[in-house]
Length: 229
Image (cartoon, rainbow, N blue to C red; front, side, top):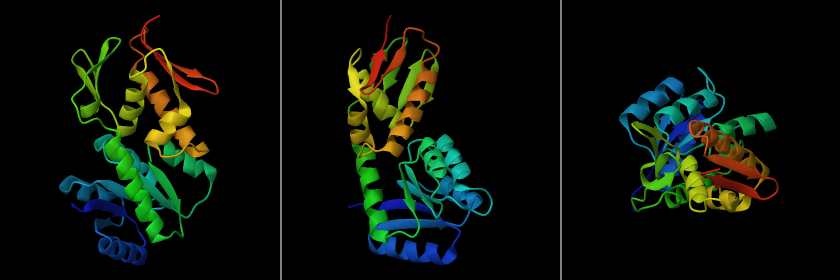
């Protein structure tokens, strides 16, 4: 079985070394970076399955690094490590597209389980066949993570792709929030629900050029993708 390739961005040198060593023993190949600059350089030279980002970094915080990662490597999942417990920090991290958020101090085995769960969901959320779906004036290629309009192609994240595919499979019908959260996040809790709302907002913006497309929120139920009025 191929090793999981993980980018760990942690400025605490002792924690970084200990965690890297433990993850390596568990079959996870780790590249350790102490800050934003080092992390971006490592990303240019290597391919990773997932990134684990400390929120508190010396040059800039992990949120800024996450924005860079999401822009340049939209298919790569990531999670945050943090000693801060403010709800606002958790919501900010999830709104940036984080797949999970784990508080320090944490158990290394718990981190490994969360990584494995994220990768399992990430792999299962992308279809293997080359289906092309028509959504109004757009064409949607889930397997390529692409939404196309005429000569323009938009590269989606895996979460955006998963949500849109679930909606596009049932046009005009309600897709429940719980179903989306269970399939793409693994559980339907408050923080994941807030993250889902952020992604729905992003998808709505992508479809603004076609007035016939609407993603309707049905209070207490879920979402409906309308492709004509």
